Image (cartoon, rainbow, N blue to C red; front, top):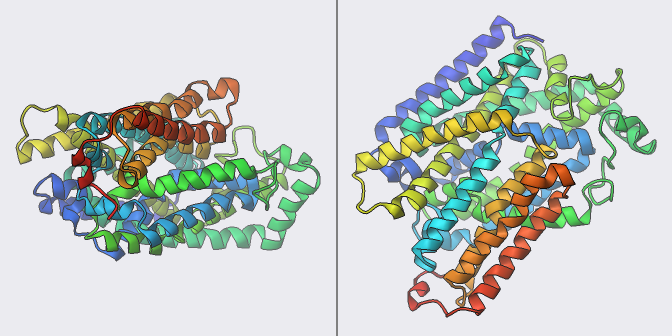
Length: 502
């Protein structure tokens, strides 16, 4: 399906309004505090909208739909684990409470207070490495959605990626977190409408009974029907050995706890909140949203599987990743697809802006600043941070063009995130709750925690390394590094007592 004039009008109106709102916030940026953490004045409602919008990107739609296509409704189990982890952290204040109270702009900044400047710099390096590699596939997956959902020529994909990035870059580099928050709020509203409308139309098109019967039929035949389309897993039981299995889900729960407490794009909202109580409330009220984040796009993917399996099979030019947007192009009528594409652009823009700002802030605050002999002027700080946003955009553009995924998109994102999640989570927990933790153990945890994910990225496609093995090993190695390194070296200096979990 190609876009009609009414679809283009809807999309252009949305893009124009979003750009205007983002650029308008530029006038309120007076320094890096405003640029990076919005002056720490974010309230609960704005925090909920911003957190939800940033963590639901077009890449999210793509990988959750792929899970639905390959694993049926069992793919939504990860969303349930994410909800449980975020609610638990919000309820207890585990890590995020003392982290917000510490008044830092980034997680590595806390490590200088607790451990040493070298640990801060090394942690910043691993945070940026994991974050940028994780974000590297966002643009390509976003471009593929637009290509297959709207019918634009596939050779336009690179240009689509560049245009998306350029739009986000303008208001992010100028307005920082203030622009990100206001555009996130608009994008949260548009996404909500688009996702609900699409889900209703998908159910009406494929039929709820037909959807369940189609998934059951694929499984009842031992995967023979589904194998042609890629569904060889139990579509309703995530614990079944053909689906995720116990080992994968245990790793995922640990991974989600680490995400809720250390994933810098989420933590940036914690650090921008007015106080620790606001941050905890934001987490609790946002938590169940993550179930829908996996369930509804997963429904689209499962419906695509059933529809293609009943209509001659998946075309050769499609995969489990691109089946969903192609299916939507057949389902959504003119006008509606314009709303949906605008919603997907909203998802892409909110995620890209939040992530670029986050990694630029970490590079500025924890890698560059500690190496400067004298502080920069406020204008110099802003120019440097904006330049870093631009540099990240250039990296993402080129990285997204050549890297080939070693598995499905969700596994890639989880493992790249683990490059720093496991080790930084270990540092945070030990630094806040274990007085014996010291800089030697912290450095060992950072290095060892990155080994498993990096091996997976380099050799995973050649040797078929299970993602749960790479992910779980990073938590184990980081923990061993922290404990052994701390116990075999001198206790920390008394200054570390200034950072505590109280």
